[in-house]
Length: 296
Image 1 (cartoon, one colour):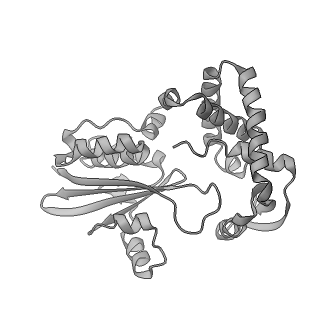
Image 2 (image 1 turned 180 degrees about the horizontal axis):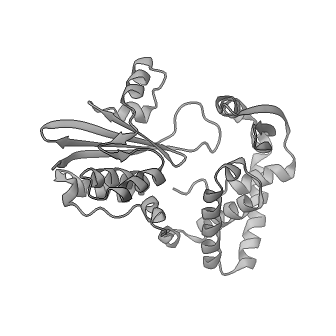
């Protein structure tokens, strides 16, 4: 029977490389463990909810945090150590990971994989507590709480984090969810299941915002104030196409156009058509869509 001794773990949230305003962050997790006498490092980088896992023979945490992908030797090392399977457990999107675990719950690697995912999906304070809890212990001997993605896989969604939000944060989240549900997004067409989950969250947030009149007053003032702040910043509305999916538009700060073009051109299925100066309504919609970006 395999035993995984967790020697140490690390976690960081990072934003590196070419950025434009409101670019999403990456979560980096490294777990150093021993299987028999050999030490190895299980590393995960989660970007926009998608995990990428690397099994390394040395500590690469700092390099991952630095996002030093222009270092060709390091990029080659990552390519060589990227894994799609860890001792019989599928490594990929979370649904695939937990499907694999469900099919083989007695796999000795399950606690280690669940622990790594828990660190990535926890808040900074929670992760620090879990790191201290597990140091020097065997993975199958510690009580590992279910992460949010594990609960979702089982049909449970944990909205307890909403209880920790102050009124301003709750209003910001509600504004983002409402605006997103009313607008057309290419990501929703690609992932309708994710869009459905967002609508479920919207219903839960609405239950907590009892005073709709107060929210509408706050919303009007918030958008007006943020729009005034943005007057010195140029916004553009970009038109682009995804093959077999249709034509879309999105509004972004003009400073982010190059990064946006890299995303479109690198997709393999999309291409950029044109951009124009954004209208007042489009800028205000952009503000509303990003109202909750400060929330972890």
